[in-house]
Amino acid sequence: MSRDKRPNILIFQVDQEQGQVTMPGHPCRTPNADRLAAEGVRFTRAYTIAAHCCPSRASFMSGLNPSGHGIYNNVLNRAAIHTSLNAGVTLWSEVLAESGYNLAYSGKWHVCADRGPADVGWKDYGATSVGGRDHHGTTWEDWRLRTAQPQEEGPRQRGTLLRPGWGTLRLYGTGGTTPEAEPFTEGDYRIVQNGLQALRDLTAQDSPWCLYIGPNGPHDPYIIPEHYARMYDPANVPLPPNWHDDLQDKPRVYQRQRHLWNQLGEDEYREAIAHYWGYCTMQDDLLGLVLDALDQTGQADNTLVLFTSDHGDYAGAHGLFAKGVAAFDECYRVPWIMRWPAGVRNPGREVSSLITHLDIAETLTELAGTRMPAATSGSSLLPWLRDDPSATAAEAVFNQFNGVELYYSQRMVRTQRWVFVHNGFDVDELYDLATDPWCLTNRAEDPACRAVVKDLSRLMWRQACEQDDIVGNPYMTVALAPFGPMVAFE
Image (cartoon, rainbow, N blue to C red; front, side, top):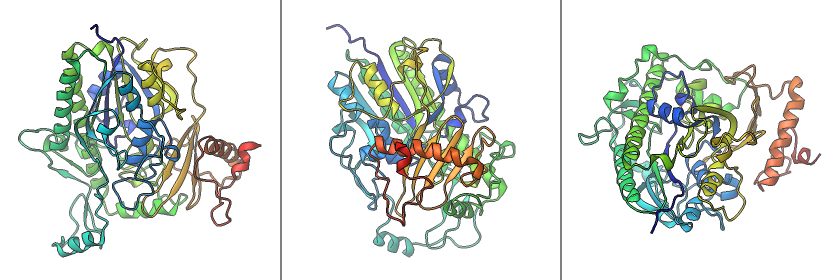
């Protein structure tokens, strides 16, 4: 039987990497991502849907917003609103498997609690974060056990935060490897090695294939082997231009987060960022192992490679770290580089049009010559890869954050110029990227911007209507948006 000529697919999706660190000129070294970009297309304005692991990954796999697929929070937590995908939701992996692709999965799943990769078309080569186990330690018995353990005493140590009653938090440090895995962290090395075994198995067959490799890094805490921990001299690490932001014109919960991080001295901020960059470079080196192995198979020319992340990390921006309820670009903008030698025209291009995780479902199913069984919220990126002049740029992208245990609902609209954030729990936000690219000045209540707020509110509510979003309650204690849903229909 002759070999199926449809393109192969290789996805390398890291966890919590800023889109900015892979951009040209950034001090963080990512030579393998740069190699991909030189041979493919770099999307410079790519965004996650939610700055939250499970909702973002479910959107990536389904092409739907959280209000469509039903995963609003991290599912490995007993306080999650939903732990299962909504009835009838199909993942693109199921469509590819039905169309004749062989699929293999290694690494972080974190999509839903009731199904794992093997249930939706993949052969499991060592998926992690599968199932409904509560890994956040929120049962009261867990707290009792933690309290009974010896607690750190004395002054705060470098790279740590004192949190009375919560336990000390270590943000960065050295470790995480084994003699076999050196110089990589043991977990990510094992994920990549499992992925390379899957690659060997897939390329030995005649069917087209799709391989997903999902390392755990550079997710906090930034605990990395010494080789990477020493890679960047903190003395040469610049603080983000918005590091000094006191957040006084932004939601109170942003300020409370900054108050926590203010325990760190300026030199510790630089050390933390240096460790984060080292972690990102480690992921890039792991990507290099995968690209080299793909080259050795002889199938690289007809393989679409995607490098991306589930979401970003503040990494010191606005004085914050990690991700969550602060709607800044550092957390929502992700790396997105695609290479396909047999299909990309004019490689080495950058595309500044707005795209999101939602676009991958339509892209991959079109690539495979099939379609999603129901409408998604995304669009195929193949016209951009083919440098098609008829490729249509999105007017805006829309983000959803549905909170955690204490809940902080947000809806975001991003255009090329403006970022509007409707916060259900506090003041709204509006930033003019043309004059304030680091989002230092909130203009949501500036009378001169009232028309802008109305226009972006119209887009927000129109999107909410089209996606059957769960917002829109008219009760007086929650209907506090400056412009309500009716502006969508004016």
